Image 1 (cartoon, one colour):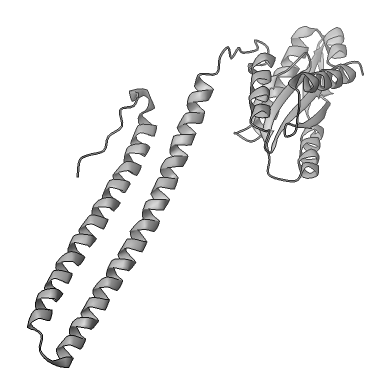
Image 2 (image 1 turned 135 degrees about the horizontal axis):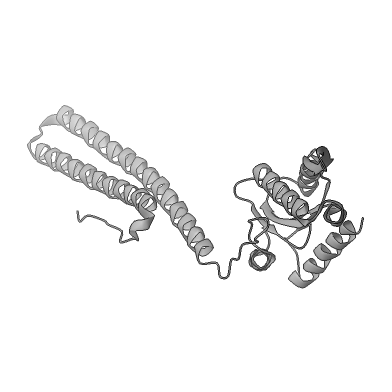
Length: 263
């Protein structure tokens, strides 16, 4: 049968190889089905010829047994190959969906990087939330993490110290969140993560609160010495499923950020 190929960008060599391997499996399975069908057809032709020459009841019984055996073999092989094809096509569909999701991420417009934290900015976070809400939200959440009293740290130790603390908090959150979670610099002392969890909302809330409450300290130089300064964070969790308005959600997020920043 003709070779199946994919014309993809060479820069996506790994994805190309994976998809080609799946297509090769499909081609092999189809070929096996054809071979099994041809083999069974040959066996049936032989049985038909022998039936013409068969004599007596016993000969007919033998041929009938062979015919039933041949048909059962064909049914079993067809069932097995059908299941195998179904599995291969499911894997192929998953690969295609993954590639499409990656392409959407690559084409995400205007993804700017915050110069202090190194994470994508609020504008990108808003686009991601808007897209998630438009799809119905599913089991996704907007999770806000606010660094408490950052304005006091800036006033006492300087903005360079505050910026360093923001970077350390961002790195800590990134290391604790799932690789699939998307983390952004929100506003001022806040980070926002768009996460997806399959647990009950109360369990997700408890998990996020534990993450925010984890002990985190940083060293601050004072004159010729230094002190260990605790870095406190608070969190807010907002389900995106059922969210009617991104604007209303942003007001809630900003209100929480402003409230914690004034403490």
